[in-house]
Amino acid sequence: MNQSFRDMLQQLVNLSQEEKITCGVKAYQTLLPALRRFDKDTEGLVLTIAIMGTAAASDGKLVAQEMAFIMALAKARGVELTVEQAADMVKSSADKDGFEMIRNLAGALDGEERSALIVFVATICALDDSITAKEIDYLESLL
Image 1 (cartoon, rainbow, N blue to C red):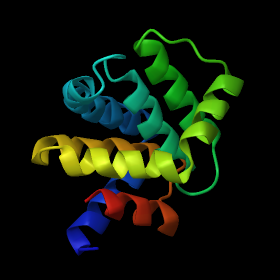
Image 2 (spheres, rainbow, N blue to C red; image 1 turned 135 degrees about the vertical axis):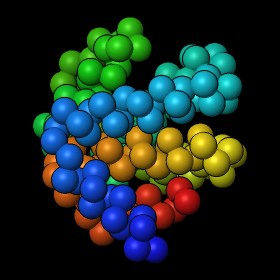
Image 3 (cartoon, rainbow, N blue to C red; image 1 turned 90 degrees about the vertical axis):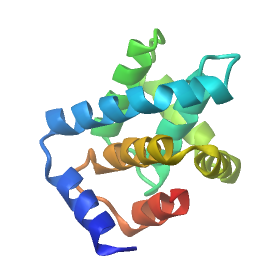
């Protein structure tokens, strides 16, 4: 991983929770047209859930900040989730197929869309004020 990527991740970790959420929402808004293009049946909702689930599960733990963000973004898309439903969503996305689906999506995106995907995933990973080696490995697999 190059130093500028590490620096970007550290800058993201150093943001306040509010700034992280704003950053994640902006990245998602940039990414959403591509998600809708690849997932026409649900207007990108299935891919959104898979991205959020794999990002939250990439370090092997699910924290309250990740859950809150997932639930808020789902609500913004018109889907009300309970904590249990959100946790189940993460668990269902956090298998080999879920991670592979998001890696394949990353490979099909253009440069701006892929950058938005990486920032969106990194934001979710950084919500607990750190980015672990496992999360970095996942993010690198999307480059």
